[in-house]
Image (cartoon, rainbow, N blue to C red; front, top):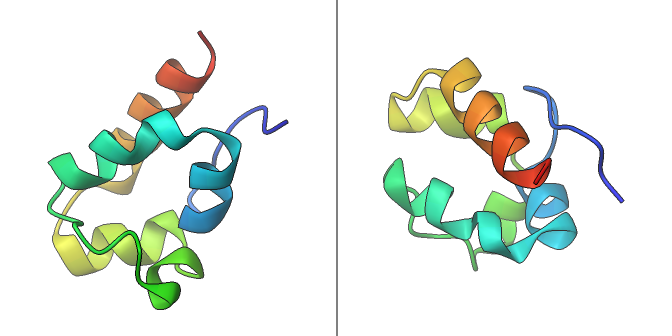
Length: 67
């Protein structure tokens, strides 16, 4: 079980740990979660591509996953 995510956590790891996190990725414009390349992308890399502050996504994911 994943305890928390960091900027280096892979998207695939987040989704594998908790599939209910998918809407957070959709919210930032990342609609390609089924793509094999996205699974191997870090949160930092995805945020850079989509113009989203990585810390904002990390905070949302960690708050959601700690419930």
